[in-house]
Image 1 (cartoon, rainbow, N blue to C red):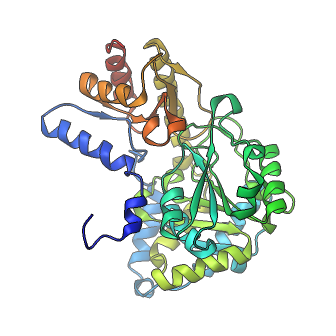
Image 2: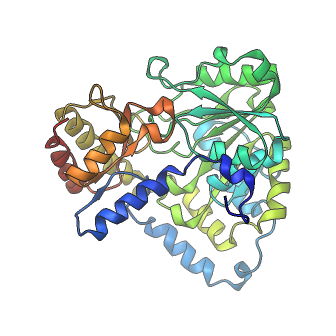
Image 3: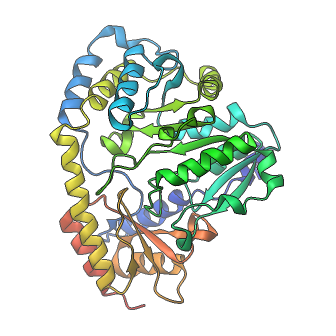
Length: 388
């Protein structure tokens, strides 16, 4: 280990997407035509009406200063209005809403705000790697909650030992789920809220994919009566509005937890660029804009191509009802890294091996709906030619 590297960095698992990106770049450098169904970064641009609002906001000199604090009053009010329209949930904008530099930042900083060294964080697996890395940086201890197909990719809260739950400070949930694309019913959120009240745990629901759905709109954990006593929810503009590079998100819910997170942020960042917040207000105030809704039809077309194509190629796939991911079971007897490596080597298609996300993701690969319909068709045509 380098003398300049803190010991805590050695506790981090290898960042999966960095390894996938390295292999992809090597293949491209060799002149191969690569179809990337790996990292979930939308391929469509941010809707023009949002870009236009950003254009005017960035020309206003008042927006060029430090954006200290937890977000513009107007931004937090727009978030509260969205929650009332979408979920029927009332939020107090000044205490129960804060802006984030992307939900990744909020997830990464939250354990520093809430968790003392040696305390437990309940992390779903497979799951977003930052649940673990943020815990490690705070000196916390991760306890894995397996997500399994037979349980609908929901954690079995009853399986968490009481002595672990007694030491836990955070319970992470993520629905609609990355990578499995599972949705959690409101009844599960009710059970999770009751569990967290029993053990005095902060429930953190990562709702980054809440607006990427193909059937019924997924619920919010804050729709559960009394949820704000123990819960916060994080939402991102990245996937909903194709704004991954803009770094804009928000957290809502329990005021004490948000105040703690805001205190960490005030010491480590200077807030979200105000012009971006202005553009965010325009975005979230027009969720039904034709340019926003149109992408759901685009993703549905790609979903149908990938699901039918993978099935024809001999893979077992459950049709996703939300997110822009297809979670596909590997052919019998093969591990996910073998499948992913062979698909890249023999077909030039990049997928994410579930085993790279967790041992509980082993046996599956994740495909993203983030290339065009034509390229999606080309991808599954190539995959079908690989003989496993």
